[in-house]
Length: 343
Image (cartoon, rainbow, N blue to C red; front, top):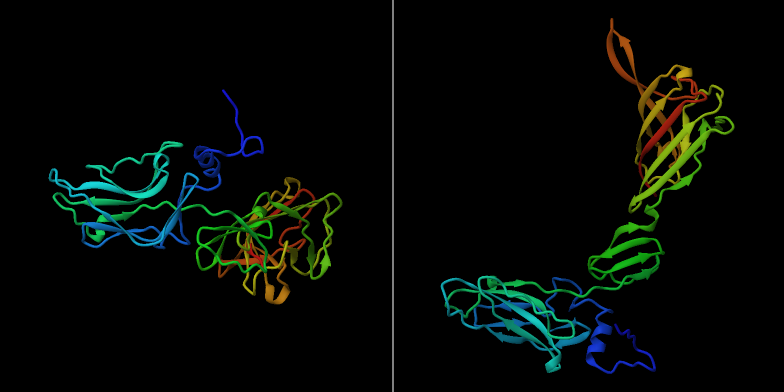
């Protein structure tokens, strides 16, 4: 099998087949339009025996096409049988005729297949047309838009970039965040920061006093971007010591400040080492951004039942301190997980 490559000084493009092979790699077939709602090369019917093809441009197998005036296409009469005929309007590239043209392609009880031969006749659809039995007049409802559209290259940008949000175009902002244009705004699509999760070191305190959980303690902070400025966060603590008893609730920092003044809620699981009693509890952690800063979990609470009125139980909750309602010691595990909306 012979190998070939071009264009080089010694192997230049000299045939239309080479040009088509070369350029069809640069762009997918389709219509140039800012939106699929635009009228570029759109086919419409008006209860007449002709269909109108609007102005527009297209790319088909490496060949450029332009229609600069409304084009009328005749509808062949459906003179056979008593069933509707299913036809196509196509854009046809015909190398033997050195042309790209709009063509009417009749079918039958099913729509005809597209002809697509590399370096030969190649068709892409513009519309499906249904012609009633015995008719050549097509109502507007008899035409279904089936245009293909070209793709758009991914573009780069930064926060100061005011490029218009072209519908269907993908934009990478600051090298990490991916946005998709919808014609009026850039919508967040994803981020390179979403995978993998990143690490940070949580800082624990009680009333402003840093808590020492012991040398070699496990103090893990992990976070991962989910969408926009929403992040998943996990904090896990496994002490190797028994810190002093503090009168204030324990607090722990987040990887960044939370959005506005709303409180974020997290799920908490606390499990004692069997040597410390083997107790366990599920609870809720929360931020208090208006009073205790937006970059930390300010309260970790667990539900407790108090016996009142001769044994009737009333559900209550209590802040976790270093030694109340549990004495957090070596071997215990405290895990906090949840999502936050970052500032």
